[in-house]
Length: 454
Image (cartoon, rainbow, N blue to C red):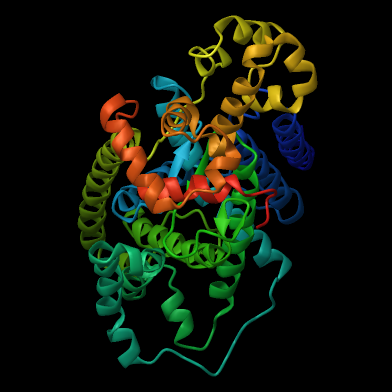
């Protein structure tokens, strides 16, 4: 097959995957409902890569598969790194995760591997479409400002660790200030070098790519069974999908941060880069052959060490996530209703309904299969379990505290409810993970929510 035909097939397959994923998600069809994010994102990546290949003879998946694989790897490593930061920040947590085992471990790498390819392909599309056009201003970064970059970056890195409730947004921009001076000094692709001449086009396109990808991330997340929930301080009451409105401002600098981090890291790869616009050879490799050989050997050793360290930190991060960040896992109806009426749970399952939201969607039909004494109790349990996919353990904890319906939950005061849940759990030991007030606040806020906007 010709390259143009292959690229068209990639576009069709990618777009088809995206459409099928969202169709399957809203109809509660597995695996799309349970794993919306990876299907939607790999579909989009395939479509964008095919489009770039078809229209501009540029691509990664088939044209430069090695660079695509390397980008997937570092994407996962970098996001696991940010998951470690979240252990301190407590800005989000995961619900509806698959039961613990080898597959969820692998899936975490696959999911996080989409972050960089997705953003960078959107960025390259904006470059080719010239959206926006050239952004050149009279404002340039002068030497005195550049010298302060490292100090600013250190403050932005330390403050969120010391005062996470107040300075958590700084994490998403700290590495821009820390690593850009390194990129500029050693000849990597550098936004700082461009800014010296008043050239801001790349910077603005990265910001735009970040907000576009952020919107798509949240769209994929909202209707999925396996999802993340934000618990950022001060801004948790008004949300679009699961993201607080002001939280969308974090996506643009995050895209720039990833761009800078990869540029710095790729200095150690001898000029190989995912971006075709980056020169093949950094200038520091020019010179005597013996010097070049020594530098390459040194960089290869450092790069290999970073790979080993990155994998170690990722594995450590995943282990910590299982205890601190993953709050609930997907459950069959039999497990959700085991303490109420196992017989009714089996009847509902035989009907072909696998998920609580399916039962609630077809409640008029479902209640005909349920014994009259259990109808109301089952409906309330399912409504609680599906609220932010909190799971059976948290639903039972709320019921034990006298909160047996979504309506009652929405009427609670967070401080009082949190204290009561702590007291109840000390006696019943339903949760074996720490209960955080922010997550209780998320439940209360979600209980009054009627749509993706509030």
